[in-house]
Length: 380
Ligand SMILES: NC(=O)c1ccc[n+]([C@@H]2O[C@H](COP(=O)([O-])OP(=O)(O)OC[C@H]3O[C@@H](n4cnc5c(N)ncnc54)[C@H](O)[C@@H]3O)[C@@H](O)[C@H]2O)c1
Image (tube, rainbow, N blue to C red; front, side, top):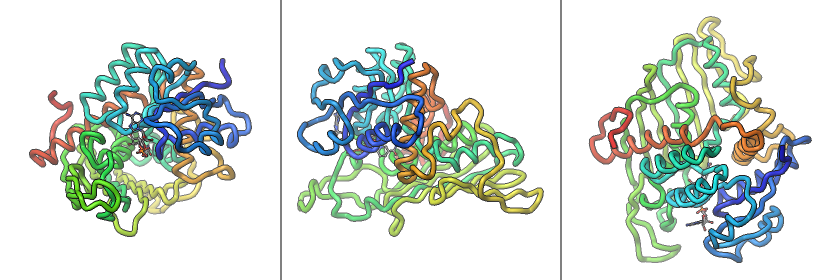
């Protein structure tokens, strides 16, 4: 078994750097890591920027050439390009039989996501998607508590993910604000994480309906410019999910919540209690147990989730924490490195990502056409 795997990164923007830090720091944050990463190469659109970062992160080479990138001996390709550009790199890696870690959402739309998932299946490669909230200790506790059956059937849920990053109307156009490049606004970017959590914790969706709004419809083409471009993605979205098991609930996502830089909340109401997650407290959930009439919080007496690595073997301990965001990304990178090393499938693979993508597609269709609930699976 290899103790170090060669990773090739595609894109070194915001999240490419977060992944690079995650890979590099596995060896610093885990006393006896199961496997470590060697950052062999990065594929970029242009060279010359971020030289201090590249050197310190230990990235061996950068290139703008796909051929040169894939000529490196890569054990894993990690795709961190803008969402609409995932497909090209996923297909390039798949046809070479290289395991792929891809940022979320899997594609710009369901058609692209299906092509990627199919290519992975055809080439029999391991895949993984960056729905990183799953790695939070609080979310693992919620999953174990729900799976224990103690709280009975889930009746309803509500969740929100709020940022304020696009409130400033002077913030210029970028790929995230163009539907063709992003596959959607706040809902595809942020809401996708909550869709994955609902699927992971409660179950698969049967019906999807959504309402969306774009509050700032024109933005400067570049910082300070008087020339503007039309924004065609959502600033706010409210999605209702009816699940196959009968549970129903809402996901609300916005990048325009004044005063809130990053808030994620999820409440799940069951027949015999309720479970409450607030990402401000990523290590603990709160539970109301109807039988005792008590609220419980702190370290909960639930075992690890069956079929998944114990949280301690992917998520850094408190003394090495670099904050919730970086910790979840490191855990996701480390989990997939272990999958590749041991040749075992990820619980969060492209098939799982495809189900999230279908809900995204249904939500956008619903919001743009009928605003009624659409049945899954979607008609092509
Ligand atoms: N899981 C998460 O928490 C999370 C958070 C942020 C972003 N993301 C996802 O990560 C991806 C990238 O987002 P970001 O915030 O890093 O964006 P970004 O704009 O900061 O960086 C994108 C990078 O990709 C490069 N790039 C652009 N076109 C390219 C191409 N054709 N080929 C290769 N590289 C190209 C850009 O030069 C840039 O370095 C998106 O899919 C986004 O949804 C996920």
